Image (cartoon, rainbow, N blue to C red):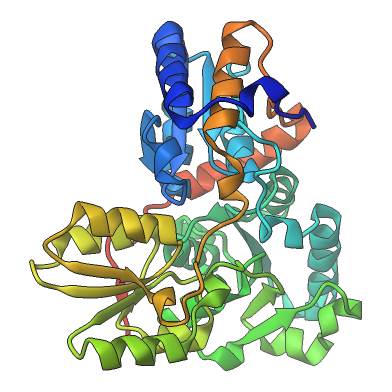
Length: 382
């Protein structure tokens, strides 16, 4: 892992911003900077495109002119950009420390072994087909394993449609699955299953630290969804107590949360949706609307500043615990400037390159994700 040179530590914010602007101008159309919605404002202001994981994956695939793609997100996102871009393009991430705790909760070999175990426990004679669905918040290696077993990636925008594809008949364009193995976010999978009309009793947690995931053959035969024991620590911060606080403070509040939140939090909210779905819903809310939003705080603060005719606040204000992604915050102005100036010098740093064999398989799972449409709006809770 390359370390930020000491010469960048002494630069103040104004000089950093000025030099980043100069570097962007010098590189011109050969450069494309992608910024995730959870990125801090001082960094995302320099992004050529902003978006959630699905949108940025699509944009990365469309960048034909740019020779260099600098991804202001986390590592798995840069991997996806490398897989979807051409071999001639170079993908960099300003700071290699910008990983994803959720993605790191699943190992590709463990996921492959889990699939073998689940298939064996389902029983060959039963004819049950298990389809893996890996959240885009996973490593390229896990995406490759997913494709190998006939599955697809998903984002929080299109996870329901991906689940429906996995369970649809092959003659209707589906994967022909009877069951789904969802990796690595248990909450996203459980919430999606319930939103599709299934019961929580149809969902079984697969714990990779236990033999056979802690499941019996009877449970595997009875279950419909098997959920890897993983989660997003940011969305794990939200609680039903915070929702109660928001409703007491603002009786007319609408609570919107991300489906990575625990099931009880989603059930207690008014609606749930991905970052892009939340952004659209906030924009469409009437003036004077009061919205408590349970997702990464940088996005919520940005929405509040943009829509000053509404009262918008992070749900986490109730506990005064900032809901921020520490990994995303590893990318700052110093690292962004270093990344751009290293490209100008002809020696790009922190290049993300997925090996050809892994990339070939992972691209199949990613392309399936891109081809399956997102759900257009929030899912309302009853």
